[in-house]
Image (cartoon, rainbow, N blue to C red; front, side, top):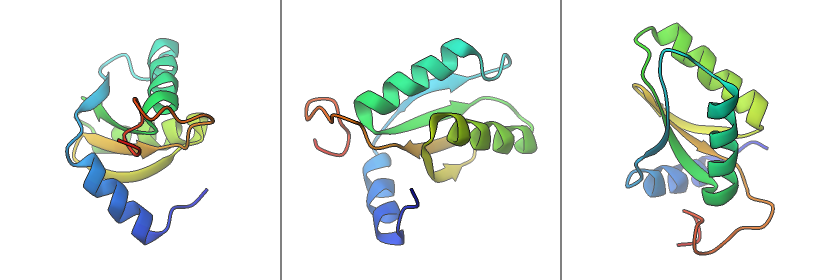
Length: 100
């Protein structure tokens, strides 16, 4: 599920106005965090995740692990914030960031 450059550009424009819905701190990727990311991706399709860890390599590893586990696409990473996309099985026009 690779995104084209046009899609990435469109999703970055939409994502610019979004706030992070999930924050990851010192405990890293717990089951609760993964559950919340999964729910948010299913509801909103395009979400921001803030990773409040100072080590850049650890942040990169966490983003890669989220993408692998959740089967989502990393659209953009700026500093400690990652923009993630996964198409919903049944998109809800009231919740989806792409359909609003």
